[in-house]
Image (cartoon, rainbow, N blue to C red; front, side, top):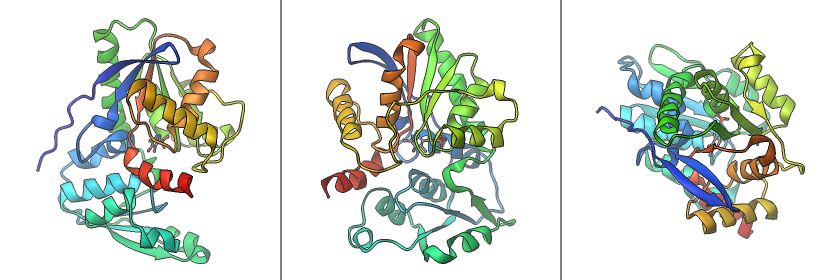
Length: 290
Ligand SMILES: *Cc1c(COP(=O)(O)O)cnc(C)c1O
Protein backbone atom coordinates (compact mmCIF):
# COMPACT_ATOMS: atom_id res chain seq x y z
CA UNK A 1 0.00 0.00 0.00
CA UNK A 2 1.36 3.39 -0.99
CA UNK A 3 0.84 6.09 1.62
CA UNK A 4 0.97 9.64 0.39
CA UNK A 5 1.86 12.39 2.81
CA UNK A 6 0.27 15.58 1.58
CA UNK A 7 1.81 18.83 2.84
CA UNK A 8 0.53 19.78 6.30
CA UNK A 9 -1.17 23.14 6.70
CA UNK A 10 0.27 26.37 8.08
CA UNK A 11 -2.16 28.01 10.49
CA UNK A 12 -2.06 31.59 11.71
CA UNK A 13 -2.79 32.00 15.43
CA UNK A 14 -2.51 34.61 18.16
CA UNK A 15 -1.10 33.70 21.55
CA UNK A 16 -0.52 36.23 24.31
CA UNK A 17 -1.27 38.92 21.72
CA UNK A 18 1.53 37.80 19.44
CA UNK A 19 1.11 36.31 16.01
CA UNK A 20 2.55 32.88 15.18
CA UNK A 21 2.23 30.45 12.32
CA UNK A 22 1.80 26.82 13.33
CA UNK A 23 2.99 24.11 10.97
CA UNK A 24 0.37 21.45 11.69
CA UNK A 25 2.43 18.29 11.35
CA UNK A 26 0.18 16.83 14.04
CA UNK A 27 -2.42 16.61 11.25
CA UNK A 28 -0.09 15.15 8.61
CA UNK A 29 -1.86 11.80 8.23
CA UNK A 30 -4.35 9.93 10.38
CA UNK A 31 -2.02 6.97 11.03
CA UNK A 32 1.32 8.67 10.66
CA UNK A 33 1.93 12.17 11.95
CA UNK A 34 4.32 14.48 13.75
CA UNK A 35 8.07 14.76 13.39
CA UNK A 36 8.51 11.02 14.04
CA UNK A 37 6.58 10.38 10.83
CA UNK A 38 8.89 12.81 9.01
CA UNK A 39 11.91 11.03 10.49
CA UNK A 40 10.58 7.63 9.41
CA UNK A 41 9.32 8.75 6.02
CA UNK A 42 12.38 7.34 4.26
CA UNK A 43 11.47 3.81 5.39
CA UNK A 44 7.86 4.29 4.31
CA UNK A 45 8.88 5.46 0.83
CA UNK A 46 11.55 2.86 0.10
CA UNK A 47 10.54 -0.59 -1.08
CA UNK A 48 12.93 -2.56 1.21
CA UNK A 49 11.54 -5.93 0.02
CA UNK A 50 13.87 -8.01 2.24
CA UNK A 51 12.83 -6.42 5.51
CA UNK A 52 10.40 -8.52 7.56
CA UNK A 53 10.82 -7.01 10.98
CA UNK A 54 11.67 -3.73 12.64
CA UNK A 55 13.14 -3.59 16.12
CA UNK A 56 13.56 -0.58 18.37
CA UNK A 57 13.86 0.32 22.04
CA UNK A 58 13.21 3.12 24.52
CA UNK A 59 10.53 4.47 26.86
CA UNK A 60 7.20 2.69 27.28
CA UNK A 61 5.24 5.81 26.29
CA UNK A 62 7.53 7.08 23.58
CA UNK A 63 6.10 8.92 20.58
CA UNK A 64 8.70 7.20 18.41
CA UNK A 65 7.42 3.78 19.46
CA UNK A 66 3.87 4.72 18.43
CA UNK A 67 5.05 5.99 15.03
CA UNK A 68 7.19 2.91 14.38
CA UNK A 69 4.15 0.75 15.16
CA UNK A 70 2.22 2.64 12.46
CA UNK A 71 5.10 2.27 10.04
CA UNK A 72 5.31 -1.49 10.70
CA UNK A 73 1.57 -1.87 10.21
CA UNK A 74 1.58 0.10 6.96
CA UNK A 75 4.52 -1.95 5.68
CA UNK A 76 3.30 -5.34 6.94
CA UNK A 77 6.42 -5.80 9.11
CA UNK A 78 6.68 -7.41 12.53
CA UNK A 79 7.61 -4.90 15.25
CA UNK A 80 9.52 -5.84 18.39
CA UNK A 81 10.15 -3.15 20.99
CA UNK A 82 12.40 -3.33 24.06
CA UNK A 83 11.68 -1.30 27.16
CA UNK A 84 12.67 -1.42 30.82
CA UNK A 85 10.42 -3.50 33.12
CA UNK A 86 7.08 -1.68 33.27
CA UNK A 87 5.73 -0.24 36.50
CA UNK A 88 2.59 -2.15 37.46
CA UNK A 89 0.26 0.88 37.10
CA UNK A 90 1.24 1.08 33.43
CA UNK A 91 0.59 -2.58 32.82
CA UNK A 92 -2.77 -2.43 34.58
CA UNK A 93 -3.91 0.71 32.77
CA UNK A 94 -2.72 0.42 29.22
CA UNK A 95 -3.19 3.79 27.60
CA UNK A 96 -1.98 6.34 25.11
CA UNK A 97 1.07 5.45 22.99
CA UNK A 98 1.61 2.04 24.59
CA UNK A 99 -1.97 0.94 24.05
CA UNK A 100 -1.91 2.30 20.52
CA UNK A 101 1.32 0.47 19.59
CA UNK A 102 0.14 -2.83 21.08
CA UNK A 103 -3.11 -2.53 19.12
CA UNK A 104 -0.96 -2.09 16.01
CA UNK A 105 0.57 -5.50 16.76
CA UNK A 106 3.78 -4.45 18.51
CA UNK A 107 5.52 -7.17 20.51
CA UNK A 108 6.80 -5.69 23.77
CA UNK A 109 9.84 -7.13 25.53
CA UNK A 110 10.62 -5.94 29.04
CA UNK A 111 14.23 -5.90 30.16
CA UNK A 112 15.35 -5.54 33.78
CA UNK A 113 17.14 -2.31 34.58
CA UNK A 114 20.46 -4.07 35.37
CA UNK A 115 20.81 -5.77 32.01
CA UNK A 116 19.38 -2.95 29.88
CA UNK A 117 22.57 -1.58 28.32
CA UNK A 118 24.03 -4.99 27.54
CA UNK A 119 20.79 -6.14 25.92
CA UNK A 120 20.42 -2.97 23.85
CA UNK A 121 24.04 -3.05 22.69
CA UNK A 122 23.47 -6.62 21.47
CA UNK A 123 20.59 -5.64 19.14
CA UNK A 124 21.58 -5.87 15.50
CA UNK A 125 20.14 -5.17 12.11
CA UNK A 126 20.38 -7.78 9.37
CA UNK A 127 19.13 -8.31 5.86
CA UNK A 128 15.63 -8.98 7.19
CA UNK A 129 15.71 -6.86 10.31
CA UNK A 130 15.74 -3.09 10.50
CA UNK A 131 17.07 -1.68 13.78
CA UNK A 132 15.90 1.83 14.61
CA UNK A 133 17.77 3.83 17.22
CA UNK A 134 16.04 5.49 20.15
CA UNK A 135 14.49 8.83 19.24
CA UNK A 136 15.01 8.26 15.53
CA UNK A 137 18.18 10.32 15.17
CA UNK A 138 19.45 8.09 12.35
CA UNK A 139 20.73 9.68 9.15
CA UNK A 140 17.70 8.46 7.18
CA UNK A 141 15.70 11.06 9.13
CA UNK A 142 17.16 13.71 6.83
CA UNK A 143 15.07 12.50 3.89
CA UNK A 144 11.66 13.31 5.37
CA UNK A 145 12.89 16.47 7.10
CA UNK A 146 14.28 17.80 3.81
CA UNK A 147 10.79 17.39 2.40
CA UNK A 148 9.35 19.26 5.39
CA UNK A 149 11.89 22.05 4.73
CA UNK A 150 10.62 22.31 1.13
CA UNK A 151 7.06 22.62 2.41
CA UNK A 152 8.10 25.37 4.80
CA UNK A 153 9.82 27.29 1.99
CA UNK A 154 6.59 27.06 -0.03
CA UNK A 155 4.48 28.04 2.99
CA UNK A 156 6.63 31.12 3.63
CA UNK A 157 6.21 32.17 0.00
CA UNK A 158 2.46 31.55 -0.07
CA UNK A 159 1.87 33.53 3.13
CA UNK A 160 4.41 36.19 2.10
CA UNK A 161 6.19 35.87 5.45
CA UNK A 162 8.66 38.55 6.34
CA UNK A 163 12.00 37.13 7.55
CA UNK A 164 10.59 33.74 8.61
CA UNK A 165 12.14 31.71 11.41
CA UNK A 166 11.29 28.19 12.50
CA UNK A 167 11.00 27.32 16.15
CA UNK A 168 10.95 23.66 17.20
CA UNK A 169 11.45 21.75 20.46
CA UNK A 170 14.52 19.50 20.65
CA UNK A 171 14.90 16.01 22.04
CA UNK A 172 17.71 14.41 20.05
CA UNK A 173 17.85 17.68 18.06
CA UNK A 174 17.71 15.79 14.76
CA UNK A 175 14.55 17.58 13.62
CA UNK A 176 16.01 21.04 14.25
CA UNK A 177 19.39 20.13 12.78
CA UNK A 178 18.18 18.61 9.52
CA UNK A 179 15.63 21.39 9.03
CA UNK A 180 18.40 23.98 9.42
CA UNK A 181 20.49 22.12 6.89
CA UNK A 182 17.73 22.40 4.29
CA UNK A 183 16.25 25.81 5.06
CA UNK A 184 17.47 29.20 3.91
CA UNK A 185 16.12 30.78 7.10
CA UNK A 186 17.02 30.41 10.74
CA UNK A 187 15.95 27.45 12.88
CA UNK A 188 15.78 28.07 16.62
CA UNK A 189 15.38 25.39 19.25
CA UNK A 190 15.54 24.66 22.96
CA UNK A 191 16.73 21.49 24.72
CA UNK A 192 13.83 19.61 26.35
CA UNK A 193 15.62 16.38 27.21
CA UNK A 194 19.12 17.23 28.44
CA UNK A 195 20.90 20.55 28.82
CA UNK A 196 22.42 22.79 26.17
CA UNK A 197 25.79 20.96 26.24
CA UNK A 198 24.03 17.65 25.59
CA UNK A 199 22.14 19.15 22.65
CA UNK A 200 25.36 20.58 21.14
CA UNK A 201 26.93 17.12 21.35
CA UNK A 202 23.91 15.66 19.57
CA UNK A 203 24.24 18.27 16.82
CA UNK A 204 27.95 17.53 16.43
CA UNK A 205 27.31 13.79 16.09
CA UNK A 206 25.06 14.51 13.08
CA UNK A 207 26.90 17.51 11.59
CA UNK A 208 30.53 18.51 12.11
CA UNK A 209 30.14 22.05 10.76
CA UNK A 210 28.85 24.20 13.61
CA UNK A 211 27.83 26.96 11.20
CA UNK A 212 25.05 24.62 10.10
CA UNK A 213 23.74 24.09 13.65
CA UNK A 214 20.43 25.64 14.75
CA UNK A 215 20.43 28.47 17.28
CA UNK A 216 19.72 27.37 20.87
CA UNK A 217 17.71 29.44 23.35
CA UNK A 218 16.86 28.56 26.96
CA UNK A 219 14.34 29.19 29.68
CA UNK A 220 15.46 30.96 32.82
CA UNK A 221 14.18 28.08 34.98
CA UNK A 222 15.27 24.48 34.50
CA UNK A 223 12.71 21.75 33.86
CA UNK A 224 13.31 18.01 34.16
CA UNK A 225 12.26 16.08 31.08
CA UNK A 226 8.76 14.61 31.32
CA UNK A 227 8.42 15.59 34.99
CA UNK A 228 5.06 17.20 35.81
CA UNK A 229 5.42 20.88 36.67
CA UNK A 230 2.60 23.42 37.24
CA UNK A 231 4.19 26.05 34.96
CA UNK A 232 4.28 23.57 32.08
CA UNK A 233 0.67 22.50 32.57
CA UNK A 234 -0.43 26.15 32.78
CA UNK A 235 1.06 27.23 29.47
CA UNK A 236 -0.26 24.06 27.80
CA UNK A 237 -3.77 24.92 29.03
CA UNK A 238 -3.40 28.56 27.95
CA UNK A 239 -2.35 27.45 24.48
CA UNK A 240 -5.36 25.17 24.22
CA UNK A 241 -7.68 27.90 25.49
CA UNK A 242 -6.37 30.74 23.30
CA UNK A 243 -5.58 28.88 20.08
CA UNK A 244 -7.84 25.81 20.20
CA UNK A 245 -4.79 23.67 19.39
CA UNK A 246 -3.77 20.76 21.57
CA UNK A 247 0.00 20.65 21.85
CA UNK A 248 2.15 17.84 23.22
CA UNK A 249 2.61 17.94 27.03
CA UNK A 250 6.20 16.68 27.14
CA UNK A 251 8.13 18.94 24.75
CA UNK A 252 5.88 21.82 23.71
CA UNK A 253 5.28 23.57 27.07
CA UNK A 254 9.02 24.04 27.66
CA UNK A 255 9.48 25.08 24.04
CA UNK A 256 6.72 27.72 24.24
CA UNK A 257 8.17 29.10 27.48
CA UNK A 258 11.58 29.38 25.82
CA UNK A 259 10.05 30.97 22.73
CA UNK A 260 8.15 33.59 24.75
CA UNK A 261 11.08 34.36 27.06
CA UNK A 262 13.31 34.96 24.04
CA UNK A 263 10.67 36.56 21.83
CA UNK A 264 12.41 39.96 21.59
CA UNK A 265 15.55 38.34 20.16
CA UNK A 266 13.59 36.28 17.63
CA UNK A 267 10.57 38.35 16.54
CA UNK A 268 8.47 38.04 13.40
CA UNK A 269 7.58 35.93 11.51
CA UNK A 270 7.76 32.84 13.67
CA UNK A 271 6.73 29.43 12.36
CA UNK A 272 6.26 26.99 15.24
CA UNK A 273 6.52 23.36 14.22
CA UNK A 274 3.85 21.22 15.88
CA UNK A 275 5.60 17.83 16.17
CA UNK A 276 2.51 15.82 17.05
CA UNK A 277 2.72 13.53 20.05
CA UNK A 278 -0.69 14.37 21.51
CA UNK A 279 -1.64 10.70 21.72
CA UNK A 280 0.80 10.55 24.64
CA UNK A 281 -0.99 13.38 26.48
CA UNK A 282 -3.48 11.03 28.10
CA UNK A 283 -0.76 9.20 30.01
CA UNK A 284 0.99 12.45 30.98
CA UNK A 285 -2.30 14.00 32.19
CA UNK A 286 -2.79 10.94 34.42
CA UNK A 287 0.59 11.65 35.98
CA UNK A 288 -0.53 15.23 36.65
CA UNK A 289 -3.66 13.87 38.33
CA UNK A 290 -1.59 11.60 40.55
C1 LIG B 1 10.38 13.57 19.41
C2 LIG B 1 9.69 14.87 19.61
C3 LIG B 1 10.41 16.09 19.62
C4 LIG B 1 11.92 16.14 19.48
O1 LIG B 1 12.39 15.72 18.23
P1 LIG B 1 13.95 15.50 18.01
O2 LIG B 1 14.11 15.30 16.55
O3 LIG B 1 14.35 14.27 18.78
O4 LIG B 1 14.66 16.69 18.53
C5 LIG B 1 9.69 17.26 19.80
N1 LIG B 1 8.35 17.25 19.98
C6 LIG B 1 7.64 16.11 19.98
C7 LIG B 1 6.16 16.18 20.20
C8 LIG B 1 8.28 14.87 19.80
O5 LIG B 1 7.56 13.74 19.82
